[in-house]
Image 1: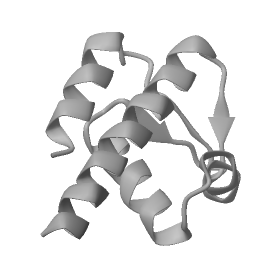
Image 2: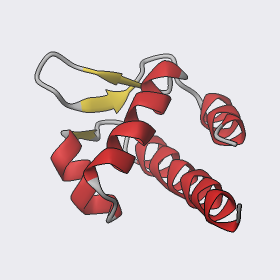
Image 3: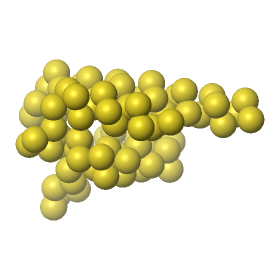
Image 4: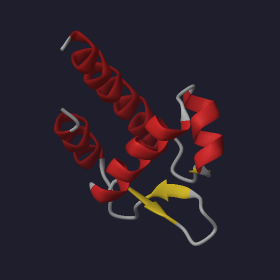
Length: 86
């Protein structure tokens, strides 16, 4: 159970960090491999986070594979996404 709680805490922390970075740098666009290296997470976890942020409509995935902030995504969307990560 502690492992699950630790993973959820890490997920929340990473989501807050990712959302913060995309809010601070509106033109930021990262491919999955770049995101994985930037945030120091394994490929599976990175995919899980990116998929979650796409599903929550904070990010969108362009045809070139880059993840960018959705045009309508605001800070409130980011905060809601982080809360829902639990």
